Length: 334
Image (cartoon, rainbow, N blue to C red; front, side, top):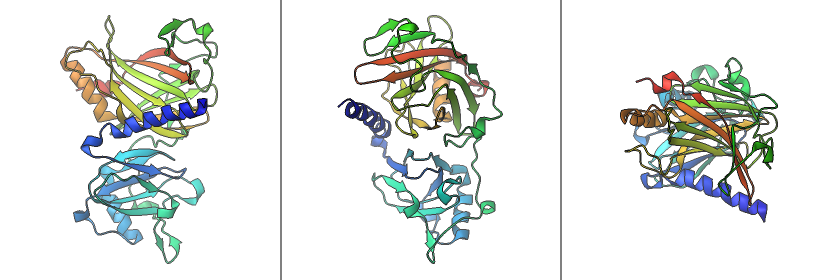
């Protein structure tokens, strides 16, 4: 029963993340493989459905500025207009590297799954694109749960093995506790050791390393807050771990005192991927900068991030405030 209830909670979060914008028309693209999938959706009037390696490669080159990525076993929202989805799997997993997928899309909200059954076959052989003919990923990080993209980055925050959270709250009862009283501290990836930030072209990236495997029902939360007292929360990004990948959602905090920034329900902001004790996430850069500009125009100096972890069961949820650090200058510059 407990596992079922937790599963319902995760399902609700996923449903909210992908359906909050349903009024504007979205469908879900699901990656059914353990390899990243890079893709673009091209309007049908711009392209005849490609059937050869060269035509698929040309279509991807023409769409190189609009390439998107679905994390391994992840999902992202896409529009409901007619189009042609053109993409390929990246990475060495299961021999899928550079295998091409082309799917004509109708104008509806039906979910679309990409997996090995969708790979184009020519004469019974799976199509593999020449790497020198297709565009590379334009961002410094490919969200696949692996640490290789972060090897040269320095952490913005580091915590020792004996460090405790700055603050512990029992979220299920709103009670503030001494960290020594925690039921869940150091469980399931709550004890974060390193935090990394990296600004990309269209996405903002966050990575963290913990002292043990990251398990389901652990969460991570980034709150954009005003620097001057009394500090006010403007925006919160959250993820709840459910498998090796999933959505990052955001909301404008209800009860914020910043006029003009109205509270809003959770919406999709990006995705995460993890492997063992390492997790990386991407957040829509334009979305974050829009809220920062709105707050700045209202005279609020929102240059601080509060970082927290959490863990929950059906009867108890604990929220661990781990620390604060400044937003990168590139995000808050005009």
